[in-house]
Image (cartoon, rainbow, N blue to C red; front, side, top):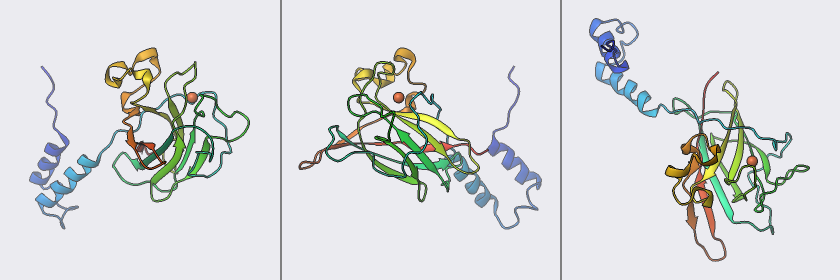
Length: 212
Ligand SMILES: [Fe+2]
């Protein structure tokens, strides 16, 4: 027989009924308190899952929101996202390191092409880049991330692309292929925008950090 377990809502209701929350909750009606509690539950988010750092990280990348290099080939990509804690609240003081290959699957191991260390304002970021290429060791297109923020665990992760031929048109089915992707939530849907001379792809990649 399973042990009886109270949900957090049931526990809260019991506390209200017994008056054990009354001293700290005099300004709230029961319904207000429950609404506040439920809002917190609705905003709760799982931390973004981690991935390997890989051998191509380099310190010292510039504080730029643009990785795309004017005149270089590659399909333009815009990456946007929020940086939140597990309660769904915005985080201040965030730095986002991002690095990726060029369109041919080559990392710049001497300079800072397709590498940034972005200071984030208002817990939201937008980065202009290109769709990364493929390389033999990790043949799914990806962008590496290293995210830091005061009072939070450093997160190392990667974003992948649902349109990548590596997933053979079905990332839900094929995300475990070759053991590259740890969590299919890291594979992002890709939106395509057509414009006169300005087609581009776009993904969103929200980052959820754990507090220390
Ligand atoms: Fe990589």
